[in-house]
Length: 149
Image (cartoon, rainbow, N blue to C red):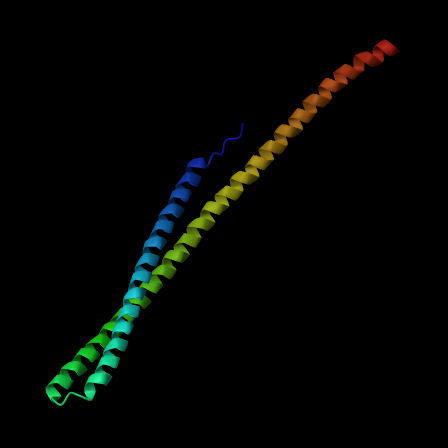
């Protein structure tokens, strides 16, 4: 029966790949949360712009206009900060993806090595079985030849 001597290493590499998959999933989740936050802030900015456009016709007090203007600027700053955070998380996602690719390659190399060794083992076992069968058939054939002669 075939036993792979590096089975523990292969098991370790599989666990490393699983860990990298979890890390990538967490990074993706964070990325999409940040992206959703940016979209909600952009929607809020659009709402504020529409509201300010409608209110500008009725506002006569410059202090109120300045408050609206400062609030709008604050939303724009929030959007730029969130966009920067999304870009940072995108870099982290890319790094996690590369780590996962590397872990998968290492695991796949061991799997291919195991498969090749198993193939060699199976071929060798089949060859030995054929040799034994040939020897048995030769032994059967020899007595028949002697009896007929």
